Image (cartoon, rainbow, N blue to C red):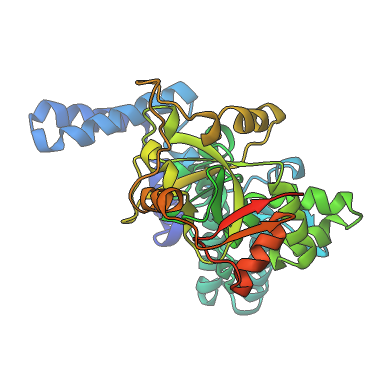
Length: 377
């Protein structure tokens, strides 16, 4: 009997495994029952948890000692693939953690064979921590892997919170590659069917279409992606070509009626603020004290046609409440400008062949804004 007791480990995980091996499901059930019979309300929650454990053990035909990890399961390569991005090899989180575990185990064997079990406690602890990292209960042991933020299986499944869990990312979440959001400002120079979009924002939400256009022009996929990131002249030219035929749908939540969701052809601008025409502020109930607008790039041809034919402010002029009223009605400065243009007598009259000559005359100062202009091709 004394010989048997001497063989029982007293420290480390081996001692925990030996203690759990003496603990049966009936013991857990008896402990929970005794707590419930004692009438202590503060301990009732623990008793309920223990009974749930008992039910789970019996349903899955397990014993408490089965929870001791003696062998680390290796997932088949099919479920832990690697990737190649350009010239870079990306092994994947699972493969990196398995590699770390094998390296730590080999190092522990060398330390144990050289110095014995008594002096190899730290290396054994590294093995346990590596196993925890694979399962997702702890951080990677090796600094290089930890620095890259590699996570184990459990952490990938449940995520840091419910929004980043595996189920949420793979089954529930929707792609938002073609959307953006920003604070709005006003630009009276915009046409009714235009919207000012910051260049950086436009490159981001139109990125797949720019890449496709560059590939069609003979640029490789890798270089087309780099061109979008670097915003090269070729990428900018492709973007300007795309936005002429693919307008943006913009909305301001909450959208209570159809005038809250409109479309416009982007005008590339500098800065971070989305600019809209003052004529559409009524439909969006928008002001410029920090209000934000959502941008959406339509993808399907049907959606693009709807944006052009149904969602342009010029296609939704009349109010759905009072058919004799126009929703994008000019107010404030615009009314003064229209009044001035109609009632102030012209100081001079000019005849031009086209609009370019008019603009050149305005830039040179020979034509004033109050002059009367006639274009005769």
